[in-house]
Length: 387
Length: 187
Image 1 (tube, rainbow over the protein chains, first blue to last red):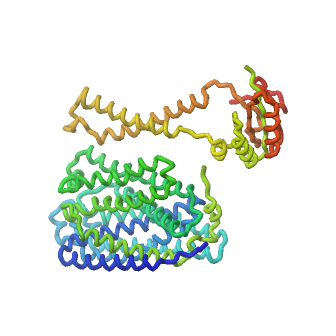
Image 2: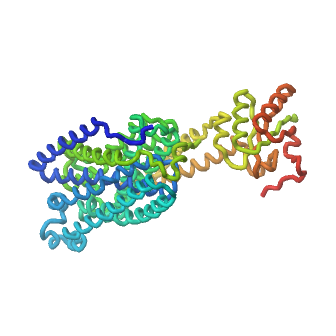
Image 3: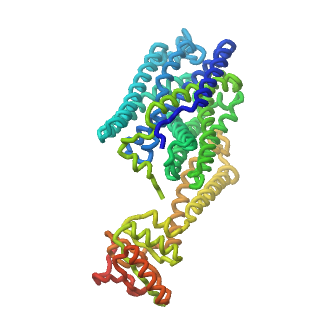
């Protein structure tokens, strides 16, 4: 069996073409509608960053629980997390679009606005970028470290690399818990700078983990259909579906909890957030968000037969790609543009970033053995069998 | 009516499973299997299909519909109260109650369904053909059908698949142990 992923020429061409089309549309949008362009940059970069973060968390979870079943697929999330440094560089460009995205960044606004005046010690441009740089450096270092240990294990073997990975996974989870909170508060929540929600970062973290699990599943199934991962069996598929299933429930729980408390409390400071997301054409997105991200996966994956079906699982994963987009669209767009807009710029930005993500991830996937040979649980993973 | 049983003892999991598979192939009815720990292959090998998950789903579905209808009836139709200007049909706040009551309903209904189907109830007399099946032995119990050839073939098959002991018992002696006469105590 071929243990190296070879990037198909067509995939490379397609990803480069996507990047090219994306860049053309981006340039055009920046000239015609800069604030819409910045909203798209933030959304799409955060979208693929969240997949990377979720993937790194997925690996860390597998290590600290010493899960055997997933050892074979470890390279897929590993490749996905290699996008983080690139996301960091793109995120830094927000410096030029601050005023289009973040209301609080305007000169002198704090003195007219008592709420923003109180928040000014935290929400100011220099500190915002200091946090951003720190967060990205920490993430990039952690991700590189995990990857390096994993590659060293391939080369030298032995249990010590597994133990190292396990230790650094614990550190990584701890770091993520803290840094991701700041990151999601800063980049997403501060768009609506008067509003706050304490459940916000947990909700977004679960969304990231949820959709990363979806993409990992999708990539594994696609690779299997291309002739890699020949030992993928129904038990693996069942385990992947369980991740998607339970995470869709947690996502639904947290998202609904945030909405329900605000709806029930009915305090104007808080309801303003959902008022914006209920009117001006955003209402159908509100419903679509729950239907796609919770209702459809929940109902479909109740059945074990569906859990083990590659085709249905793949269709569901593709649907959930849009799920994460809708979730982020609902969080980012109303605060910046105030009207529901969707058109060629949105599609163009998305395919541009998707092209970049595919390009980087496929490159990282091809850079190492697809199945880690010296992982202590590799046998267990290959012959994984649950009833 | 007294039933006659063949009790076969196995030393390990693999021979147990292979014997069950063979019995299934020869379409011999297995009356019970006793193992020290749960073995999923037993279900697979015996080909028993459970509709338990379907039952649980139906309980859940019925509970969701029932609870929402109940809340709708009490809060909107029968006794509408104005809570600080909230609409009486406060659907989002019904959801929480629905989730909790649905979980309760599924749990209890599944428990009772299981008790009824498996004939397990408080005060039930323990049936344990061999005490060692709580320790390190694996036991399959077959029912004799009165045909000696059938029994002989069965016993041969079991020995072939690695049975270490065969005991013949009937419904009265099923709970007695060949190695000690002490009745089991179960706390």
